[in-house]
Amino acid sequence: MEKKNISKIKRKLGHHIWLSRLMILVAAVLVLGLLFWMLSAPIWGFLTQIWRGPKAITTFFSDPLYTLPSYEARTNVLLIGMGGEEHDGGKLTDTIIFMALDLKHDQISMLSIPRDIWVPSLGTKINAAYAIGAQESTASGYTILEDAVYEIVDQPIHYIVGVDFDGFEELVDALGGVSVHVDRGFVDERYPIRGKGMDDCGGDPEFGCRYETLSFEPGDQIMDGKTALKFARSRYAQGEEGTDYARSLRQQKVILAVKDAISDGNVLLNPSKLLELKGIFDRYIVVDPELGDDEYAGFASFALAFWRSGNEIKTITLDQGSEEVPGFLVNPPIQVYDAWVLEPRGASWDQFQAYFRQVLNAE
Image (cartoon, rainbow, N blue to C red; front, side, top):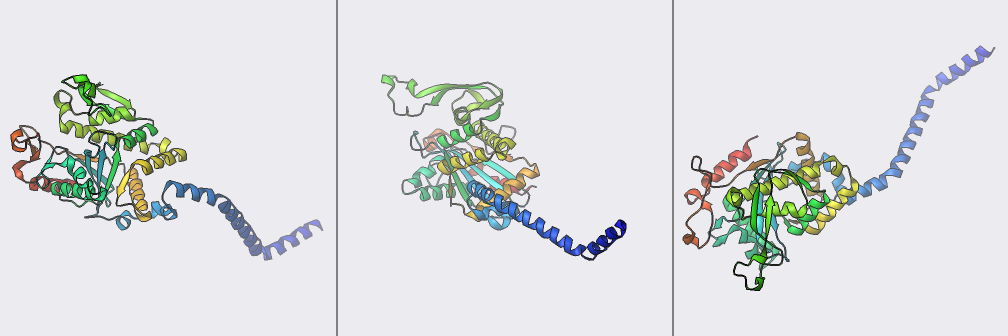
């Protein structure tokens, strides 16, 4: 009798199994909906805080080719570093780096432009281009510098990113320092001390109080913000490290170290650290023109693709070369311009521009 009742119940359930499954599905959807509702607000708010707006949440699904301005599938960014208002020569561009983001091949190419390159149209070195324009306005400073760089690379510049020394130091410190390999040790006895540029040093004809001595040993080092800045800026070391080219290579080395530090999982997976870095970017880093949600999404999408690709940043050298292999720059006699300057070999940038295009187009 009991078996008959069980069979009867099974037959009834069998007739209505579709209804049972539907009820289970509805219940599951309701539970998932409740969980999503409970979690969506804080997650959405967190992502919105990190980026610039809700639209940037679609970052990893956007195609930078359609969200970023580009030329030949590359977005070109000019990175400049300046001392800032409290430093002597605060509006001179101490660092000028042209970066090409290849949106098709997830590649980055980086060219350091020596600050001593002579710009005939301005009658001065390129590191003064921004300062000349900035006497009228910040926008004019960017425009004049952009035009000067275009004369060299023959590539349009879509964005200019400016950072001052204080912002750089704070960024490196927030990352817990950066790991840098010093290829050659050097000593610089004339590194300028902040705020001492006009000190008469009590009548000292050598103005020794204006400078400090830097010393770097070869090998791997963890540098804090102040040390990394000094390593990148040093100009008066004896030997090869005293050249503008060695200085450019050190700047590239520090930038790569910052990139590696930001890419570390302890940073990328740390919400509080990301918010701290964003605060530093907001305070110290200026992007011209300002980025909208689409551009933020495009840059973030490119950054993710570059990180996934495992590609290394390609560094490009612009220098005098050697006797065996001449470079693209020459140093004319000082009396020509009454200053130590650099200009293109053959008085034209054509050869360098052809080489530069070849490097940029190489996959």
